[in-house]
Length: 156
Image (cartoon, rainbow, N blue to C red):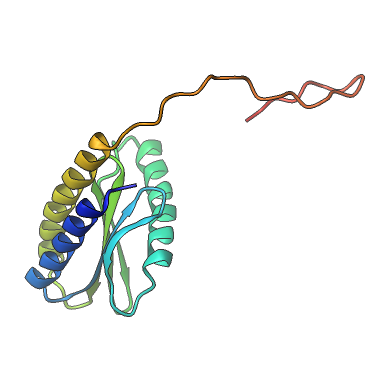
């Protein structure tokens, strides 16, 4: 997880972003597996949005791989009353922005990409500095007992 000092830096970046782009109604930084790092999302459940972002990210990554479009960069969803935009933020985080329908989508992308880059740098640097656990001895998982005549079980 990201240390508290970097979490505060990420939150400050989210707040600056919302100040620069008045039609943003929320901003959230999360790990790629759906854990909230920092958020400025009044009236929105941040944990739920982070979990849904992780699910959408998984589908987006599979789509870009299946179509040969390269690694994930961003995702834009337009609803009846606004936008949800998700941007890659370094190697292990994402930035999700909630915007009103009247927003200039070009500006949303410009500011979202810049903020995603800065947040990614903060998170990646914090993870590089974090102490790594010592690797333990690797032992194979125990095999389930076999019944006579049964086919061997393959793990997936």
